[in-house]
Length: 214
Length: 247
Image 1 (cartoon, rainbow over the protein chains, first blue to last red):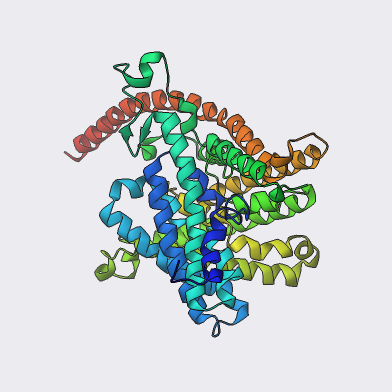
Image 2 (image 1 turned 120 degrees about the vertical axis):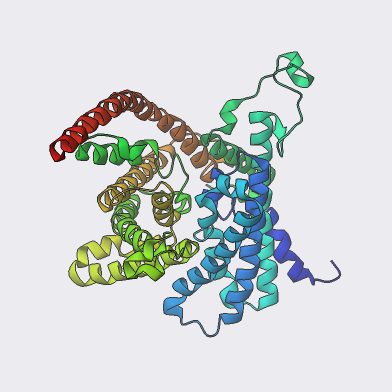
């Protein structure tokens, strides 16, 4: 971390665990839950949010002195919408199947609360470089949760990771399936995403008592 | 296929209405508007205020964005301007147009409500700015677009239905959270953790409504196949008759 001062490094490190956007700040839940049935979709969604939040934070931070505060929400929405259109078009061009899976949830990055939340809380009051780091940090914190949830849901739900079977073949009964193991199709249903996130919160708060709510 | 359905018009509305409330519930089936759902559900009274505001804004923005989609954004939608505009495809602009419409409408609604109904403004007012960035609102418009809802009337029904679905969800969780304060929840799960898990269980419960639709659909399909067989023959005989008369 020779490049970054201690304060700057904290901007990236904090959101990964102790100030995680999903489990602590409760931002950006919608997309985190809806698209995590497959690991691949989770990773692509994370990269999209990383791009939008990193670039968006810099743009807003550069414009922070010329945006009238009354219309700042509309300005912010337009900036995000433009970036999201770029992401959407890139996805449609290079990963069409995946963009069908993500369907409207790419568009919903616009109203992903993480993005508006970071614009409001950080980019409007800080310089571009620090805003960039803050954006990257929060997007990574979001990505960590998405990837954990996606990992468990795909592994337990369909026995694959990134579409590659890792637990053996369920039809020919090889690997784990030879011992009577079965895929838990329930993990692929959307309510399980909520319960998996609930369990992540439980584990995190058991390890760090300071985060417990009354 | 859907256009082939021979149905009473009102049935279509009622079906879409209940479908958008229960089967495609915004919160439990698609997880839209979760941020405000979790943040504003500590008390029933505030939950009711936000829920009412969401119904209101969805009922306005979904039909508005339907018009926008139909007459400006869709491929070929600009043909009403003249033949040379017929092959324009502006659908890549939908995100920015939808969100601009929503943000403007929310501001407008806020001003109008403040002017004409101060009491309503006092109960909804603080929630209106929150709503511009509620995923449920943009999600309503985007699902309206991707599910290709056919008419303006159906779009309004869809908007109101999904709003009521969201309202029900936030009301239910707020009531549960008020009661759960008296239960002995493990300390690390208190607050956010248990809310997630309860929502998950409620979502599993709501999945049972899915049967409502499949049951109805199967019958409808049988009817339409019968109807589809009948209609062409009738039309053929009519056509035949017409041609005969002409001859």
